[in-house]
Image (cartoon, rainbow, N blue to C red; front, top):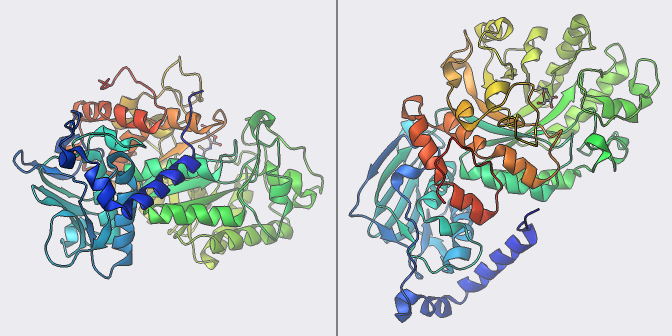
Length: 541
Ligand code: TNX
């Protein structure tokens, strides 16, 4: 297994960068541009037309390239702590490879360098759009909000040579190609789901995944926190859920185990929020609950705890619909998880409840959906949930493999919004082809082109663009034990889903996408992100 950059090393890099910022002069004199030493090595320059996800409008200007210098400042909107924070994250990401100090200062008056300005850039750009202009004097990103500035900085990172991803100093001309980008997302919700129940993934691994999501302007991370095998989020009123239900050996095949304390969970939520990513917690019920049922005997209809299970069967467990204790348990969990959740959504699963009779399922959801609302959250469930006719505010996540789905179309007619996660398109745990060693294949093999060539706004009959809140790429982890495994299954397909969620349908084209994707390879390699070298993509090097 390849060496992984640990978070400790990343932290050291940040400390190194901070040290640099107090010794700008020393650092500047070390720059060959200043000392007259060897000129910077030629590094493949990026182009304004290489960005993933493809922006709404791009106008390159070959005479307007800008080059970062040792004395470049990052100037941010005065009096905006949020803009300054976006500037700080940008500086953190550019310091290791450039070795430049890149101080973040308030943008008073005019000046060059990199400017991050909150401005009225028009309603059309909304709350996440931005306008990025590169001239010989500098790079200016303007947006209505700090979220838009953040999106613009992710574009800027891709406009620098791939060496920018290195974690130590490179002697490279840090040129940003000239021109203008005007950009905003197609869908409000662009998501990725990580299953930490089948195999537990640590806070550092989750943060590493968040870093990758942010680069591609994905703005929601759905965490699948509980399932038959394990319960991975601390609930104080039912403490054995984690100490027993999430204990050692609760991963698939008895491998691993573990859980997030409330503190760890909140730290992940805050880390994501700094990157403009909203965490959507999922507590799956009434099925997928063996971890809870095997931990607390009293939750079972017969009062007898079933044995813990670490196989990958689905659809065999159910909470006891007729017991009052079930609803006390569910309310405690919803209350505690809501308290940890600044975001609007709480996902209550609802999938594959094969041993819950349909009438019981309905009774259960009719009681539980209002509990989610009682704690101020918007209910979210896998598409089966619409059969229980919950409040139309409930978001339905479509994971089917067909393009006709009467229940879903009826739900849309009643006013529900939908997240599109068709399993045969965007299930990142599906194998790429028959040679893929990781993953499952029940929804078929999914090569990157399959995950790219579909239109969420016209995928299911009766579910039009207006009903689609967005797209999400789930990653189930029955077969995935490490961050390498996660990355290998996610990339490159996650980049395809990111583009589907962000870019206008008419701007999307496989040939263009595959060429742009090929140029991500050196970046992933610099960052030691594992990925599948799909034969469909013209990989650079
Ligand atoms: C179906 S998709 C499931 C999960 C499995 C996944 C494996 C869905 C809502 N349920 O329980 O992990 O397939 O691909």
